[in-house]
Length: 233
Image 1 (spheres, rainbow, N blue to C red):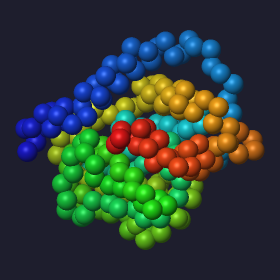
Image 2 (cartoon, helix red, strand yellow; image 1 turned 60 degrees about the vertical axis):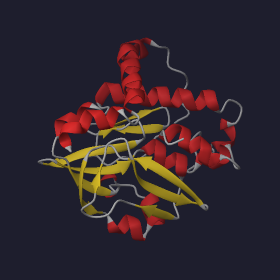
Image 3 (cartoon, one colour; image 1 turned 120 degrees about the vertical axis):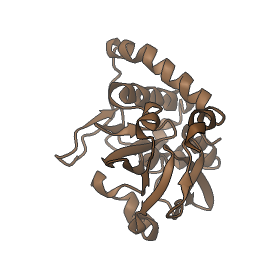
C-alpha cells in the first residue's frame, strides 16, 4: 500500500497541490516586498506557549503543517500526528451541528475525503492531510461540537490522531513556515476577490470576521463557497 503513495496522491488532487506549492514557492519572496493593505484584524488572545502569526484575519501556527484543504498536522511523538481544522476553516464554517470522523483503526489516505461536518442540514467534507491509521479520536469534540467550535486553546482543538508510517514523505506535501504564511495570504486575497462587495456583511464591529462568515456572504449557497476553499467542490 505504501509503495503506491505518490501514485495515489497524484491520482486525486495531487496535481492541484503541486501547482499551488510551485506557485507559492515562486512568490513567497515576492510577497515580502508587497505593500501590505490595511489590516482589519483585531488582536486576539493566544496562549503564550504557542507562537503564531496572523495573516490578515487568519492564524498560522509555528511548527504546524498545513494541507491546502485547510486541515493542520502537528507531529506529536514518533510517527504519530494530531489533526485539526485550521483557523480559516473554523471561521468559514462556524459551529457544526455534528462532526463525523474516521473510525478508530481506519486507514486514511492523504488528499481523500475522510471527515465531515454537518451544519444547518448540509454536509461539508474535508480532505485528510496524511496517510496512516487512526489511533485516537477526540470524543469530546464529537460529543460537544458546539463547545469544540468555541475552544480558545489550540491544544484542545485536535480532532483525531494518526500513526503515519512514512511521515517525512507525507510532510513534504504539506505547507509550513514562510510557505504556509504566503499560502494563507493568497487564500485571504482569493476570499477578497470572490466576495467583492459582500465581505462587509460578514464583518463584526472592530473588523473581525463573524464565525460562519460563509453564511453571511452567501446565505443560500454558502456550502458551495465553503467547498471552493476546502477543495471538495
